Length: 321
Ligand SMILES: Cc1cc2nc3c(=O)[nH]c(=O)nc-3n(C[C@H](O)[C@H](O)[C@H](O)COP(=O)(O)OP(=O)(O)OC[C@H]3O[C@@H](n4cnc5c(N)ncnc54)[C@H](O)[C@@H]3O)c2cc1C
Image: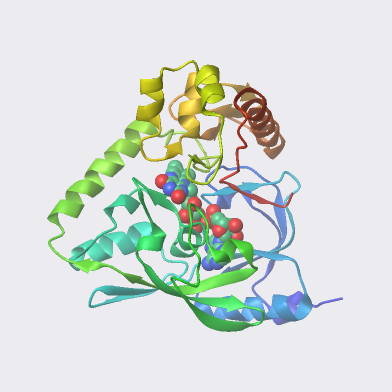
């Protein structure tokens, strides 16, 4: 029997996880620890590496669906939030908020990632999932990361991270991002400051920010990566060729567009609902259980497969299932 309390004295037991997620859903973590800096984070990771304890590291909890029974292991929440700007680079710990780093870089006259305005969550989670918006993504500004992998720390370059749409090597292998170096451009921040306002306004108008949600439930369909029966999809969506061309001009078929055309916005199971404002978002419309979300997502996936011949892939990360 491992005496976790003696190894990690700050550890808590049976901590409710829902408050640490933007979806406000899910049961408790058997063990829970907040790492206030990278020394504490590495210490916790060394303990899990040596004990074999099941664990997960969380950030802003803005991309998570936690199961109703919670997580049977250790949840490490990142509070390591220090960063510094040097020339056109930012050296940041994984737990810094994207919003804080973005604001500080603009003040310092660094530009090139206004698209990240309104992206909830922390640097580590954003790099792991190659978070992005408006045609840009973390892969464009991440120079390197320091990770904890197989019991030790190492540096991985942008190339080694093998970024693709909402994906990086960090998703394929069990490793934790401890810190990152972002490379930006020096320039007049006025244009980016205007863009930040525009993007925040756009999110406010198009996303259900008034209800708990974990962002997009499913990834958009990357038409460069998957083979589709275009005629079947156009027929199922009941759209014209011109509408198809307009909807797919960036080589992606958006899940929101599909759900809109299939009239699935507003579809509800228990407290889980397909947002009427943005079809790719499933919202917690009140007292939603993870079970409701899973049932709703399963039904949507099945109907998309049967009616359009397309396979939807989850964008949200499932914890404790
Ligand atoms: C309103 C709203 C809007 C959103 N808009 C967008 C958007 O425009 N574009 C987009 O891409 N996403 C969007 N998201 C989803 C989400 O904000 C991003 O995926 C975000 O980058 C997740 O960061 P996080 O810190 O919250 O990660 P968490 O949700 O805490 O964790 C996500 C995953 O990353 C892992 N993880 C976290 N930190 C680390 C680390 N240091 N090392 C290794 N693994 C780690 C966790 O284990 C988990 O599997 C949105 C979400 C919401 C709620």
